[in-house]
Structure formats: C-alpha cells, structure tokens
Length: 246
Image (cartoon, rainbow, N blue to C red; front, top):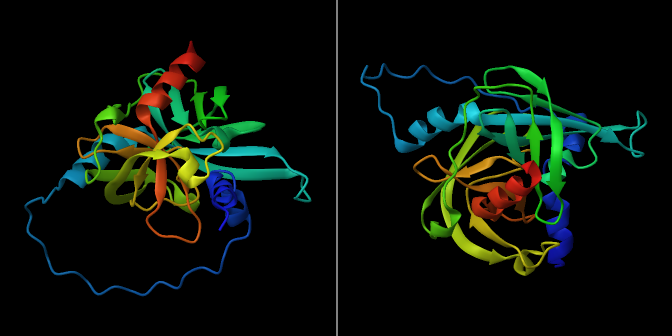
C-alpha cells in the first residue's frame, strides 16, 4: 500500500467533506427508543462531560467555498473545525480547511456566524489562523504537548460530516510519530497518534487531555483503517500561529 497516497487522500478531511455533503447518502432509518427509567436527580458528571462543557463553547465550525472545475457550478464547498485560542477572535485550524478559500464562514457554538479572514496558512505544517470580528470570546486553553505520554486520555471535539459538536474519546496511542511513517508531505514533522474517532470534518478541531487542555490539532487519518488518527502537537502549532499573527 502506498502510504503517501492514502495519507494525502485522507489528509484533506476538511476539504473533501464537500463531496460528502453535496452527495448525501441515504438517510439512516433511526429506530425509536424505549423510554428510559427515571434516573436519580443527582448529577453524575464524569471528566469527559466536564471537559466538553468547559471547552465546547470555543470549538467552531468552518465552512469554506473555493473555485472548482469539477462542479458545474464552479464552486466547491467544504466543512472543517477549529477552536478559538484568543478572545479577540483568533482561531486555529488546518491549512487545508481554508486552502484557496474564496470565502470562510465561522459558526460559533452559540449559533452566531461571522465572516472569517485567513490571516495566514503554513501548508507544510498544515496550520492556519483565521480571525473573526468579535471580542470576549470563550477560549480553549492550550496545553503542553511535550509532556503528553502514550496511554493518556484523548478527547476530540469537531464537526465530522457536518455533525456539529461531536465528541469522541480514546487514548494517546503514540507520540512523536514520524511524518515519514504515515506519508506526511513534510517527513520531518512528528504527530500525536490517537484512537479517538476522527472523520472528515474533524480537521482543525482540538484534541484535548483530561484536564481540558488542547494538546493537538486533529489533521489526518489513514484510510481503510480504524483507530489511526493523527494530530499536530499544539506546541508546534502555537509557534507557527505566533509567526502568522506577528
């Protein structure tokens, strides 16, 4: 198997979702559920629930449009994720989510929408910064990816296939996974590997530790496999974002 081809075909998880959304599959026929027995009034909150309640307000949906010769309309649409890292309206996401975008629309968890401005993108590291005209926004706290160890909890929040604010949980499967091992265009890069489920549309969303800190940006999966997802370490992403913002 050519890992590079597989990686590149799945790397564009923010961009290729346009195909999935424009050519919707037959809706799944849901089955009615039996009423649940009355539960105790006492709230049972686990650490995942606590993290989601704290961080999800800072997770955003990014819809982009770009010119395309493959569609009769000449326009391709994509959906990805991102998260606010500065209360003045700065958002981290993947470069491929906003690559060649002619327009970027950002939807917050509270339903507000803004036109986003791409301040800059580093294609080699797949990191981009988008600004929206808003202030006093909720912020996702950034962790220290250098301290991440295999076996730690990993929580992903994003918009896979347009299903907003989807939460999945797993562990950190490996750290310092070489880009050459997964077919990254920049083979010198290293990634956090996780088995938390990520799918097209999760691109740009946060990978969190059990304290609710961002340890990585979800960016890629290896096709035709399960539990092989990869995130850009937040230390590297943060350094690139600092250069972009200036």
